[in-house]
Image 1 (tube, rainbow, N blue to C red):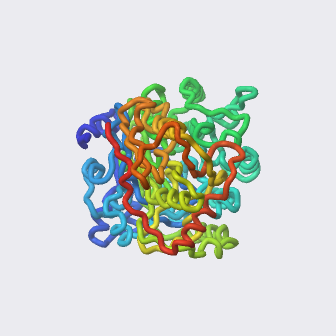
Image 2: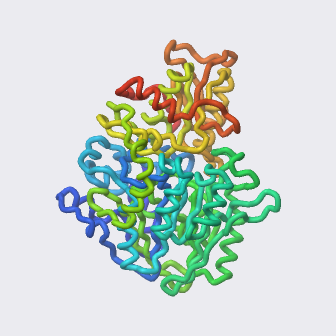
Image 3: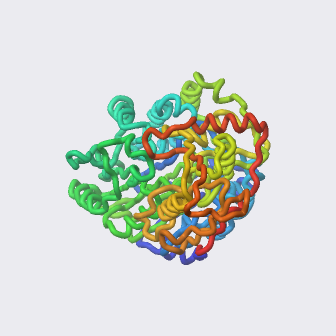
Length: 564
């Protein structure tokens, strides 16, 4: 476990940049029951440039519960470095107290109890209030959206993302980048970008495969506070691997490190005094990129859903992580002089929905997006006796429930559920509505397949997914969390190489080892293969939950992890 002193020596405090960061004093104020909106928004304005960052909203218009991961392993040189620090280790690293609002917002510890006390977080009407307050203090602030915005809810599913486009237009970002946006299909993305979006859609690493030319604007130049600023957009680099390539034919992605280096040189040549990378690479990919490409001042990172109360410095590049699901908005003030960042102030602002007032105009707009679907959204399908959450390297109770449903409804031996990071949490005793089911399953390739696979093929799939997560080279970490498995346990040594990580695959109902040559019935969903057949996963879930009435999920002890 890295100490706070070592972290700061490796981060901003040891750099030539003079600044301050954190979550402010809202934890102590909350403990005294005196927390107010004004106190959450307190900020010492610094310098001449303000950046506002929000990312990975996943179509969550309303406040939600969202439990942060219990396990978030870092591989190789980043083992034990933020964001690969969780729970009490996270609290100790950042000098936070257990049981406080900041502990609730940033860790999984005692989540159910704290959630009942502190309430839901997020809501774009509340985020609008924060953004407007920052703009009131610094009218020329840049608002930048890190992508994963148009997917992840019932209304986004029913409107092909139009609900989110309408609301984000009202927030008036200055630019965005992308990932799950492309799972709406290339035609729908083009329709939105060409006709509906009121701000630039940036993708420096998205190329047309026929002509090998950029398909979208790579950057946007701004002048704010007398400073020329280049904002470069970097979409998720591994789209055709993690998502169905047939949905966006004719496009290629990738990290494209050399192209990034050339772009930084290009925008500096155009007079950029501040270079900002609006990225959906994921934190560790951005950390490596920052170590290899000079001239980027700030990376606003996304994709891996990390929320960090302090920046991380790599060489002269500051990495900012602003969480997910609308839980946080980051404000970053910069003192830019002579083409360099001389100072900064940073605050990860928590969107506590019981403290921050809703912006009336945006609240009304959100209600208008939801109104045609209100009956479906609010329909109660069942109830949960367990905390349902998704985040974690190896399992979450939402996915355990999905696997249980797949095994029973699809009459399978083994179930596989993708390691998606998106999807809010539900507290024990809560009703499960149709909206809740779509928050965990809403996407454009939902078919719940049923197929026969040999033990050898299952092992190969498991090894491939594990390598996408635990390869020590961040540029080969190309997916989400580990695939979730129902009906089968296994051991994983994350320190091994691909092909040797997964052992002891065991059928839970019999205790027998999975045989390489034996055939098993496997059910899953979200296959990247075109023309996958099966009922939509939300229909499978609804049928299962209705039949059960009340569901509960036992603690998952079927995955044995070593080598961490």
